[in-house]
Length: 222
Length: 258
Image 1 (cartoon, helix red, strand yellow):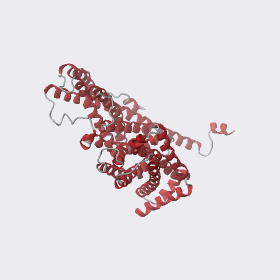
Image 2 (tube, chains in turn cyan, green):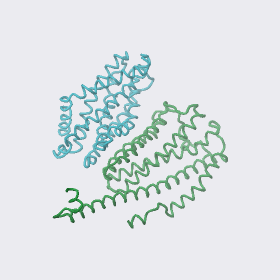
Image 3 (cartoon, chains in turn cyan, purple):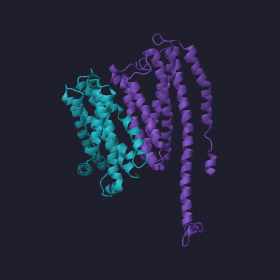
Image 4 (cartoon, one colour):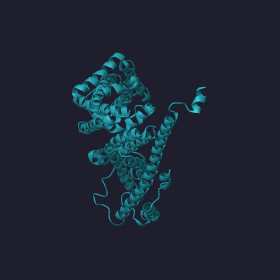
């Protein structure tokens, strides 16, 4: 199962490396979001520092929508999904593989976004382990639910509009937790950031389990 | 067709009984809420809104849990019956959740001095729950085969329901981040007429939920039957076309081709 999942993840990542859509299109979009937030918040650095943790995760979610749509496009074009199913790989392995691929892409984008934010917003980190832990868990929640919602919204003709409506509210609790944890790590809010990791863990684990259990049923008729 | 004609209404003895109970019960609840029950020492007259707010909030949760159960049973049993239950309950849950937010906001204005408080986790997560189930209903409107639509909706319904414990227990989890008071029912602070009115509200809103649920389920079931009959009819028509056209094209087709 792990081997199959890794094969699927490797396939998706190789396609991304060769197509360079993440680097050439989605990464600049991420930068653009941060710059636009700067304009919208009146170039007040102190305000940007205070809102930085929230802006980071909102930007990540907006970027994640594009990454999820891209992940679905790979399988829908040329009926690639039918061939993947005919290969005999279990749906749970496909789900885990696609989640890993999405996870890796999002982590790369988040690292870039994080560095840009540190520079443009002139922010300093008080607690790096908390940043790392909350990023790992929140990204797992985003990628596991994104992979699932990607297949739910696939092939319905209104995917571009339906996916955000379904996907973003589900991640709202994760964003609240991640923003609080980042706020604590940046020393911007008076909250125990580590306490929110429990919530983030629960969300990540639950979405992953639901995805593994239901992905096959959704693939049957997609 | 005869089958459809037999079920072309959603009323039964049970729904008539519930309907009559509501005709009597709703004015009684309003009378107790606004005239007979006393004002609260802290909340003053604003407490009267809670006789509606608390029951609709509880039955919004009940509706969403029912949707989740219907979704789980649909995926397990593959029965359209459960899918119709999930759909009907989600619609009513969204209405109740909307009412919860509206009455809570009206209550919050005199009590907290604000219509909306972003720092209140329960308020925000209830709004998120509301939006999630709006998404569920949006998904149900997307054209798809009945089975595919049911499967997709079931997964979304289950995930949305996962958020319910977070909403319900958020006061206890993040007590420092909420303006909401602890549950009035469990801490035993309510007495006499106040407690009676609150329980009357629970009963009336509970009957409202059952009444709406029964009617909406029956409408949904009829729609499913018509949809299925339509698909079956089209398949039968195509099969008949196929058998009558075997060996030679029908006159219409011949005309089209020429």
